[in-house]
Image (cartoon, rainbow, N blue to C red; front, side, top):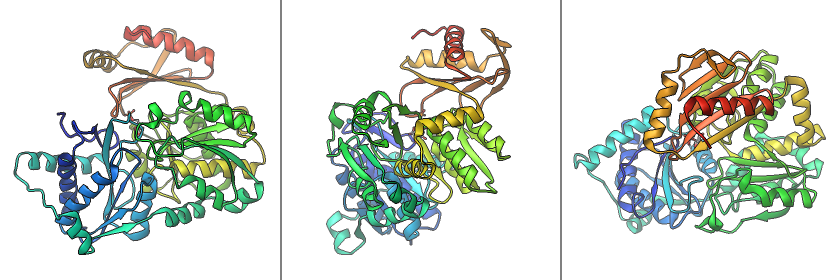
Length: 476
Ligand SMILES: O=P(O)(O)OC[C@H]1O[C@H](O)[C@H](O)[C@@H](O)[C@@H]1O
């Protein structure tokens, strides 16, 4: 059994091996200790779960432990998106949320995300405190307090909640639904058998969007044999259908619906970096006085060029929406990351794939043009960009070696690229005088080494990739 650890976004483990009822109770007890330490135990906690195998039973286990600690629970009556669960914290002034999900991981995984009272991902100081409690519980220094589920329900210490309506209302307050309604938009969806089922389609229909087709919109704990990850490779069917059926866009969500995948009308995948750039540009054009924009160290620097054109500063954070969420709380108008997380200040400090789908439709509706045309205009205004993420499944030893080479990097050049700055925000990032950059870091969610590269065009990108891999002694 592997150690209970909180990674980039929560604790994740293989069901029955690591992710067990016993470990769910340990982690929930540790979360209850944290809530009590903050003096918030007189407020309720929402417990949610996604479409994963027997997720509701793990959620019930978590509820039993929270009630055992004197904390009243709102238990979702069906699988729900992580952002919908987070939104309920705001709507009902809760102490936080325990969300049973392993996001986009393979089907054999499940996990727990803790979302504190500010309705965004738990920061490292919070997960560190929870991890310390986990160790105390494992060492027998702290007891797990449990109230059996049936008794908790009888005592009304567990009440059912359905976040759908209220969450839908909250989303509708953030986007211009009149423009969307009058544009007569048509979309195709890919719900990837995930938590967006029962949420995205009805919300779109309520605001007058025609859902022509909806792929993978039935629960399947095996995710149709794949991963609930809305990447270009996994969205080939959505891309084909969006184009063939003449839809304005294809919208996809990941397993717990906090991340997005977007397809344009021509059937081409629009990368999260491109979506973030389009939405930042549109927000900055519409709203004066935005204090700042937040992006992770792995996200496109095109955001910086767009923000600079409006005189708005950009904050660069480590990878993980937990950092972006904090920047949103500290005044960023919009924050996003290349892995498909994005939110805006009027909504939540939590990433939300449904929100992004609606913002993209709002953009199509208000601009009266296509996403492709908007991207062409963006390139004309702020210059082109080409970027790529290379994920390498390497041994722990090789991962350590590569990261060490980067840590020790003192050379002034990589191939013909001249190093202007070396940044240690997360992994090691080399920024070059040409404006290109390369980042090498270990993933916090998968056993992978990630290399992120950005250059002005595909030709420079290909050259930089060759030069970086060669310098690191890696081949693909
Ligand atoms: O690159 P990783 O450490 O695997 O993280 C990739 C992504 O994982 C999760 O989805 C987090 O919520 C994101 O904030 C993060 O960007």
